[in-house]
Image 1 (tube, rainbow over the protein chains, first blue to last red):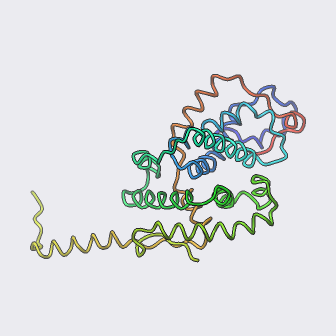
Image 2: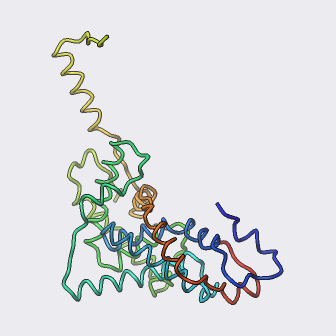
Image 3: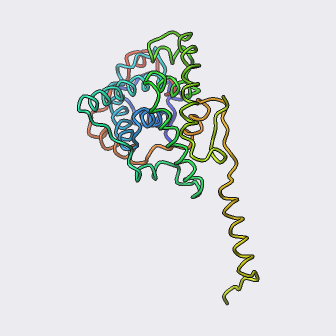
Length: 197
Length: 79
């Protein structure tokens, strides 16, 4: 990979233009988190792929507006959340609801996984998606953000427009609601993943 | 030379059934919280390679962005 940004901090002169390696570093560090959020928020791998592309392109264009008050991750999440909400509003206004294409789901798990692993991960992903789709948007977003260990409750609160105490309170209800929906989506209770309640 | 099985048809059937049962009885995955489950799912959900390719193309067509004002003054932070 390219030279990390931190190692260039000693340079006396800031470059006039942003080095391409810096954007590559940004993509490497955060693309998985952004893709996962868009995937589970939108519920469609193809739309998530497009959204991830659009989010990073927007970030590339607006990097000079990044004020350094938030972390890069938080800044990218903010762009991603706004982008996903805009997409959903546009779809809803056209009354278009589409389910994820089965063929696209096949491509989602890691290629290094064994056949059984792929099948299992695919089924698990579908169950998670079903459960998330059944939640109010607020709970869905809260769970997805809290699942990112790089974010504090304060940062999740800032991203969702509430205090960290409110995040904690709602998180409890969101967990419960998710666990109920996840259990409902279980086709073979004795063989599948479960959440302790 | 083709390998001949020493098992009779019943034994073969029984072995096959055992293997299928073993396949079905994968150890159950158990998670303490929804976030833990989502973290596991995220770890098994790679970003499709096509995103990076498309992004390189799209960003290549644009002028390079200027670094942020604070970065021009004080240097960068790790992305």
